[in-house]
Image (tube, rainbow, N blue to C red; front, side):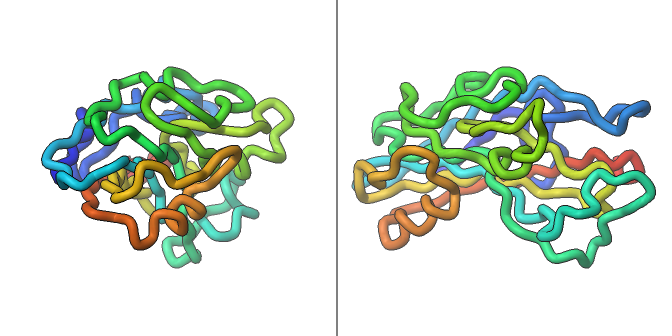
Length: 207
């Protein structure tokens, strides 16, 4: 199975148009275009009944106390955890294209609702928890929301776009389900997997 993320090459920086935020010399960062990239795939197994799309950042600090704090940095050896930027399940077997901007076009304060779309069912992404303490941004974040790594992180973050071909038409998930729940539900049902990993940073020292 071949996966193409238009504008994103393996191991190369992700364009700012697909990011949640971009560097800003005065306030460290500002909101960006936050458009989902075009995703296209070919050569799925003939037995495929549905697809799952996950975008994961495995480099998010496990302890957030010093995230984006003046005078502090997040060392490279800090424990890291997965952060999901896109959770889309039950993509019909006949679909092989998610168009740019179809699932996200701009930052939506307080988030976009998860649930049924024209090409699958959206779960919630990691911003639901990360922004829970921000009165201007707190909410339920469904669909795609792009990279926004801490501007004081010593490492460049990786973002893996993963497509899974499944042998079942639905995972039976609804409501505010997470990427972790998707991985549990599709265990034993994956016929094929393909991925592309890009990078992103807001740390001016790493640009």
